[in-house]
Length: 174
Image (cartoon, rainbow, N blue to C red; front, side, top):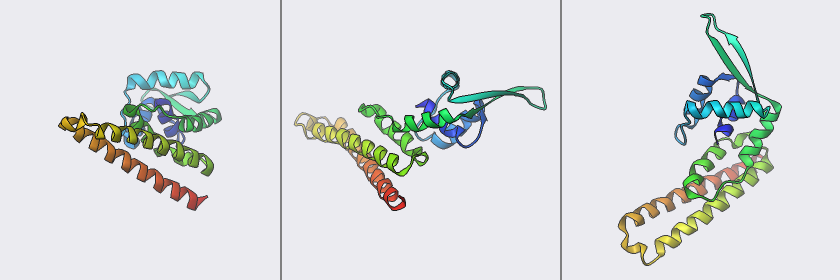
């Protein structure tokens, strides 16, 4: 997901690694907080794949700064990453779905429709699994698990409602 975040923030303008970190933090801190240690190798991978370019520039104070910019290939890669199917692992799903939905504005109407359908379908599958566990006779005795499952059901229901709102907005605007 870090590559998706980097490419997304570089769609706006070029940044230094520090600027990329701060921009990701300002836009996505509620979902993720990648470390500098994760950014540097991701920037190298993206540059090696010709998805970004870098240029070195000396500041007025004599400090060397490296600025990163997205390429046309990077724009295509960003779209591919947003549309790439998610894992059905519930631990990763909620965060990654929110990140993809946050970046959906870069997609055309048809691609948004496909993204929303994929994310909603997966959310329903995971929600149904949580409901099955909650309704299991053994779970009824596990107070803490029951409370957590109830919370998960609310979280998935809310996400599904949000996606349905995005679907309606997409249909209105297409």
